[in-house]
Image 1 (cartoon, helix red, strand yellow):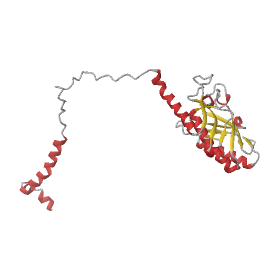
Image 2: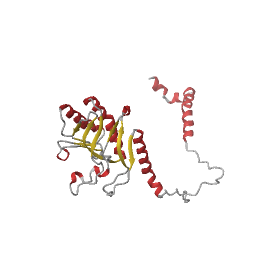
Image 3: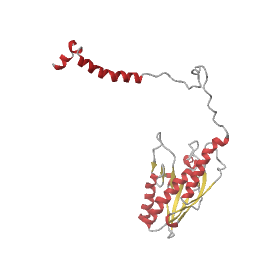
Image 4: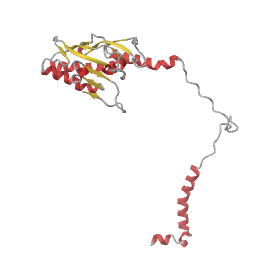
Length: 260
């Protein structure tokens, strides 16, 4: 009832309500004026706005020199090689393979010969595989952080060397004519056939001498999926006596992994 009486015409004309209304409308009016678009003030040196038909200054054309286009990949390759050396990996830049083509090629070819381990030990790779540097970083990290510690923990002996394939090898997947190029043809894959220990044991893939060695190899194979996108081995007809590791991207999301 009180609210209705305040809204009657007689009360609207009352001085008290009029003053209150001005209190409310005053800030609103000031806010409206403050938010009105202000006229653009041109700098003193311009007597008038530029004509609309004047074209803006053209942006400088991008450089097309060979140095400008090749510098980023070269810098990335050099940075990758420095990363390997900082991890005490013996690696040397290598020339592109003779059979490189649009199908088979390596972005940053390197040859690796050994990997430094904690405590000053070393893990040798006698085959000196030729790999793309990005894959070499993954593979050597896998050996240093998984394979070497597991050898000590599970077998009581240091891993001193690995028998591997050559790394790069230009061929199709499973050597099927007309199939896609194998990850080996990009330098992002390697085959491991045996692990050599400091006590002179040689554990060959698929020919483990006892359950302890078999468990060691099985652990390497399964845990390796944290480093690689593809792991194949015994049970697959083409990999019955070696492990295959690669970082080829699978699936539409590039996150699919093949760990068998």
